[in-house]
Image (tube, rainbow, N blue to C red; front, side, top):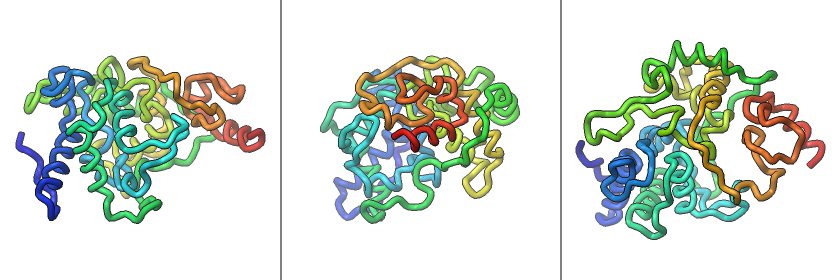
Length: 285
C-alpha cells in the first residue's frame, strides 16, 4: 500500500503532517491495532470505517463541520472539549482502545488532517451534508426481527452472517476491509454508533457501501431503522465511562443505558418509539 497523496498546502511540513494524519485515519489499525507498529491498544477497525473515505462523504459521518465548531461544549462530558479530546473519545469507544498521548505526533497529525477537511467552512456554521443524516422518527419501536431479514438480504454478503466483517490480506492481516458490526472486535457500548438514531441514519445514506448515497438510498427509512435495531441488539464489548452525561436530562433519548431522568425503559430508549420520550422531556424539563 502506498502512502496517501500529499495535500496542497504552501508549507511542506504542514502538508506532510496533514498527509500523515489522513493515513492514520485510513489505516488506524496498522499503527494502533492488534499488530500496530506504534502501539497495540485498539481493535482492528480504522477511523474510516465510521468516517467514510477519510471523513469526506456527505452524511458519511464526515469532518466538514469540525474545524468550524471546535472547541465545543459537549453534553456527554459536560465540558468544553477540544479536537484532541474528541479523537481520543473515538479511540476509547469506536476503536475500543486507549487514548493517544496528548501532543503526540499522531494526535497532532490527525487534528491537522481533520481541520484541513473543513478549513473552508465559516466558523460556527454547519454545512449541508455534515455528520449523519437525521431520519424521521418511527411511530413504533424499531424491530430487530424485521431487521434480521434486511441484514440477510442487504448486509450479510459483506459483513458476514455473524457480523464479523472481513480482514484484508494486503497491508496488514489485522486491517478490517469490511468492519465488524458486533462481537469482540467491533465498537463498544459507549460508541456513538451504538445509538440507533445515529446508526440508522448512517445506514440509510451509505449502505450497501459504494451503492447507496444520500441522493440515492437503497433501503427505505423503516428498513434502516429495523436493521439498525438488529445490529445494536447483538453483543459487543461492554465499556462505560462514569463521567458520561453528568446531567441526566441531556442524555440522548436513544442512549439505552440508565439511569435516566424519566421512567421509560432501557428497551424503549434502545429501540423507540422516541416521540413519547421527547414529549415528556418538553413537558417536564
